[in-house]
Length: 232
Image (cartoon, rainbow, N blue to C red; front, side, top):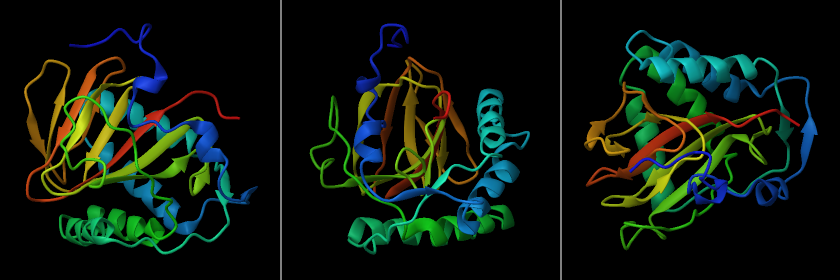
């Protein structure tokens, strides 16, 4: 059942990591512009996900996000160890496969693959209805947001990876959020039915509504983005 956003605590949204924790890692500086690989991702998002086929509220939110990103944030400059492990290898394979979907997705994939090695991956929190393998079978990273490749506090663009046969814990969203599946998975928002979505789909869930996500044999890789508030 949908929750009232007024009564919902930010800490209950399981896709949000504590901003203070994220900002405490890495060396962040003000740069003259956005890194070229991340800019490629931002431009591709505008080309792909403002199309007529995208849900109206998804386009509305992505349009606002693209507008906010016209002013680059600060850039994380410390080197990170190369991301490894079977789960992230599977994510790289998904990014390679999604490039075959269209020319637009090829550009999007190329940008994501270039920035992939500079992402800081972390494990999120568990919760209701999570699969028993959830803890070891998922990772999150931020491309844009607190402590991300581009540090800022008004927008978040994140990537989440679920290994095969994994269900993300059901939770209520604090912010309205756009989901961009890069491989096939299943989503349920509020009291709606489960829907299958993959490359070419754009999903939107309003603030205060419940969110449930799961996948079967194919690992799920998705981007998600949201507007947070005024930047610092």
